Image (cartoon, rainbow, N blue to C red; front, side, top):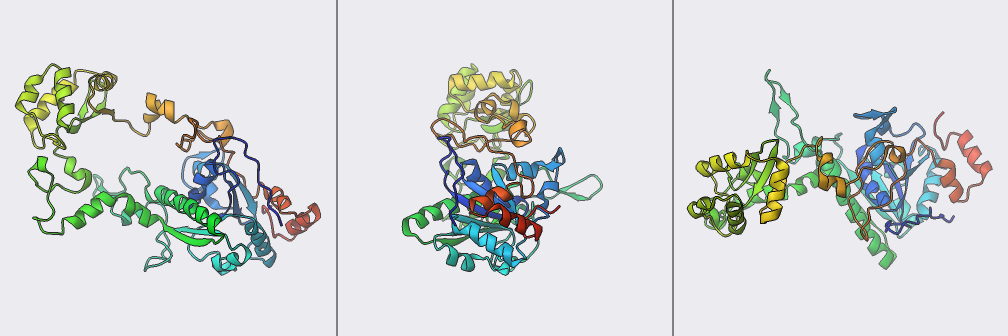
Length: 419
C-alpha cells in the first residue's frame, strides 16, 4: 500500500518526505521532534488509551501537559491496539512505506509484539530502526525502570543538596540526558537514512539517554582519566605553571580574569583570560596601571588566587549596569557576557532576535523553536501536538483503507481512540 506524503511546502523544511513511525512513551519521543520540526512526517502510534505523557509533570495547560505539547508538536497520532493481530497488521502497513521506526521505550518492547527490527526489515529492507531508552539495550542496567533525572545522577552531573533540616534535595538543574539523548538519536537516524538511501539497506541503531548525559560531560570525565597518568605526562597549562586544575568548571572557582562579577543591577561574566583582551579592558576603563602590574600570559591566564586584582575588578564592575558593560565590551573588544536565568533570558535582546517563541494559538503554549536557521529562516511553525488518535482515520486512508474497513477496525477496538 502506498503512503501519500503529507505536503510540506515551506522551503525551510529540509526533511519533507522523510516518513517516521514513532512508538514512544513519555519524554524519549523527543527524538522524532527534532525530525518533525524540520519537516518530517512523524506518526505517533499509541494505544487507544493514549500515552500518559499528557498528564505528566507541570505545567498543565488547558488540561494537557507542556511536556506533551512540546514533545509531540508537529506530529500526527494514530491509536492502535498492538496486542491484537489486526493491530499488528496495521502497524506493518505503516512501516512498509516509512523510512524510520522509533522505539522510544524499553528496548525490545516492539519485538515482544512481533514488530521488532528483525520482523519489520522483512517488510521494509531499507528501514532505519532506532531504539532510545534509559540505560540502553545492553549491560546490567538495561531492564532497570527509570526516567527523567536518573541519567544525570548516573553520569555524575548532579551533586545532592542538603536543606536546613538535613534532608537531601535535588538541586536546581537542567535535564541533560532526556534532552541530549534524543538529539544524538536524531543525528544517528539521519546518518543512517543517508546510508540506507545510498545502499538500499537499513540498519538498527540504539541510543541510551544515560550514555548521552555522560558524553555531554566528556571534558570532566576525560580529564579525570587523564589525571590518572603520571604528573610528568599530564600537567596543567603553562599559565598555571603547569599545576593541575580541578576538572571542568570546578577549576574556574579561583579565577579572576574569567569570573562572574556583580554590576549595579545584576551580574556579568568577564572573560579576559587572553592578554590582548585584558589590555583592551584596562585601556577602556582607564586603568593601565592594572595591566602594567598584572600583565598576565598570552593565553588562558585567569589570574587565579589574585584577590587584590579581584577586589579591584569587583569595585569597577559595580559602577555600571549590565547593559552598559555589554556595550563597553563590544566597543573595546573584550568578552563580557550576560548572566541570565531561565526566567529572564527571554527578555534578552539576543534571545528575542534569535529565538522567537512559537505561539499559543499554533502549539498550545509558548514554546522555543528548533534553533536551526536555513537560508536565514527558522523551520516552519509546527502543528499542535495531537490528541490521542486524532489522525487515525486520516493516516489509515492514506494507506488505502476505505471507510468501511476503518469503521470495522474501530468497532472491533483495533484502532481508536478509546471512548
